Length: 204
Image (tube, helix red, strand yellow):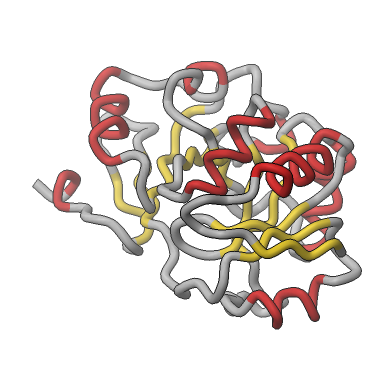
């Protein structure tokens, strides 16, 4: 694994470019979000997706979120009602994962059984720059141990995943607080997981 330490406020562009090169070549990276570190790859790389599933020791039974740079092109990857869009626009970027019906553009290997996808726009400059430079969403899943414990220390992550991923962008020790998950795929919003972020909008 290539290990690069970035400045959180002014990330080195050459390191972002290097990570994007890895993603475009079908590689797998670890990078920071506004919650925990994520394992990510290009949404369109089947080989990279299979590697991520193997790393997580899982099939496609869990929710893999799509990290997007903004909501501008969201309709390419999910079906969004007007009310869902208003909620997302109000809260993003931020520590939320919104579950929405999958659009045809999304590879079916990433659909849940309910044909939904999770959308994220994290409030993290590094994650946003990656998605912007890549030009499409990054498939992302939290960096955890085999038993699901969240890993926050980049040095520990490096030692465990050194032979599993191609590159890591380190941004210091992150919190172990996960994003809140809100299902907007139905008529009424449903809170799936309470993590970081204000959820009062969905509790009225």
